[in-house]
Image 1 (cartoon, rainbow, N blue to C red):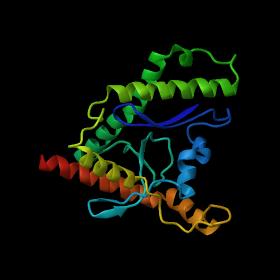
Image 2 (tube, rainbow, N blue to C red; image 1 turned 60 degrees about the vertical axis):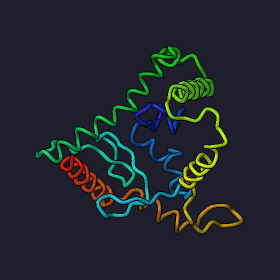
Image 3 (cartoon, one colour; image 1 turned 45 degrees about the horizontal axis):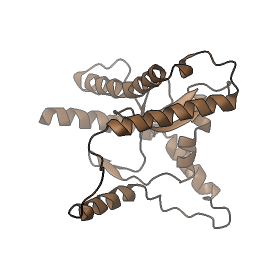
Image 4 (cartoon, helix red, strand yellow; image 1 turned 90 degrees about the vertical axis):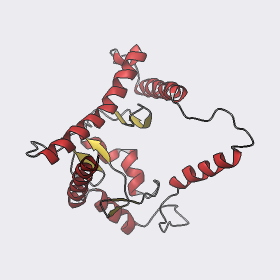
Length: 219
């Protein structure tokens, strides 16, 4: 099983491969490094607003089968008005990016679309991760706007841009234990409950629906 997070350009930002066979699309979330690092307070600090409501966790677009977590946003089943239909249309369209990335991986490297029972789990993991790294290298090479050499004139602007990007990766200001290097169990459980908050999921979805409709009305 491959768990992946990808963007519109099919750049794969996160990949988790080699989950035991007893896992499925839902239970894999319990051992996903993506959410484990969020619970441990080791992910970038995010602060943004959606129609005036402050949010401090990123979210991912997912299928309806996934649980109602604060970090997942599903499409609205059976939308009954134009506002909800618009949101569901956009949500499903953007969610296709990860499926498109899977399709590109299989098209570029036939080895990952063939039967794999003869391979060991370690070899399968090495094959998959190698294909993902090569895929990202190809995507990066084709992207426009990246800097290939710098001049003295734009050196200052480039450094300022890099500082701005680096700031995104600042970690949350949490009290870590100096001996263990981890947060307290109380802070861990607080973040655990925060991630699995169904109420936050509902608020986030409603805010995104309202924001998308308002944006369309202004166009």
